[in-house]
Image 1 (cartoon, rainbow, N blue to C red):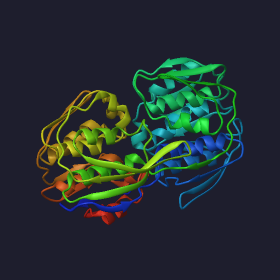
Image 2 (image 1 turned 90 degrees about the vertical axis):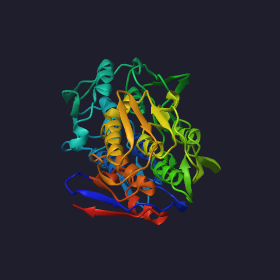
Image 3 (image 1 turned 45 degrees about the vertical axis):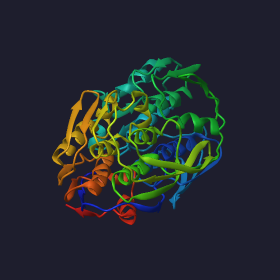
Length: 439
């Protein structure tokens, strides 16, 4: 959803979260199910697909490239794969809305095709840095034009890609996945070495579709020239979406909520580890593995939180969850310090600055640093904060109202539809007093 239609949240103070809820499907896995399903031989049946704007942008882009995709209907999608070399040139530019995952992963996947294609996005996406993917892709032989390192990206036809050994300068699943997807089309071996573990959904799904992926310590490698075989993919509930309710329950007295069938991939559970270090009462049950991805029910009950020094090894495992974790820190006793998270400055917004500014408006002592933030726990007041069109900022400040002294208004919340289309409804059902108002 573009920001033309302005939506604001008005959230009344107090309340508690209770009940059993299922948050929408995992966004990362939904994206990849369409991308890899399109390149597979046969029909991939997807259940639990996230019908948010970002994943739908990925779906629309593959339709534009000639892939027949049925759905989505009630989270079910059938992707009729065209094989590794079956994509066709779209009739015009491919618009990816606000989705950084779509544009970064597609830039790798499309570098190996036989046609020229231009990828565009909304105002927010058009301001985001792409050199982190276009530079290594250029080393592989891709020719990509950009607007001074930002979208739109025009990927030239018939690139002869060669495998490279690439050491990631910062931990980023998007860059790793981009290069592995380009590596499927490259001559020889493409290896990516990470400075710290990041989400491994791409590797898991490639293996699940029969593609050989070699993992040696912190290095992942693929050889070009293989093929993918269609499979059934059950998308677990998104731990990033579950995070808002976990934090809400952790900070509001009397809360006791269970989030069902949530993906607990070991590269994604930084939020659970960090909340537990802060003293949160979290238990996992019904643990299982579905489609190569571990899932569990997550129960979280209110417990007093304390400020901590967030371990740097947890940062890549919780990179999308920090806006909500900053709200937990604002409600904790003592000081919370985050370092090693400069990646947060180049997300949908500068999430460090956006959260620091908003928390200060609400009366919390929060100071941004070049690679993190220092938050002294206190009493959340009331006020009007800016989400900067960033879905995670908007949902985080909504949960802050559970501990606020007065009403919180959050501006520019239309982009919540990118990742969590029914957020307001589910939040109300769980006990948050929230209204969405059109401006």
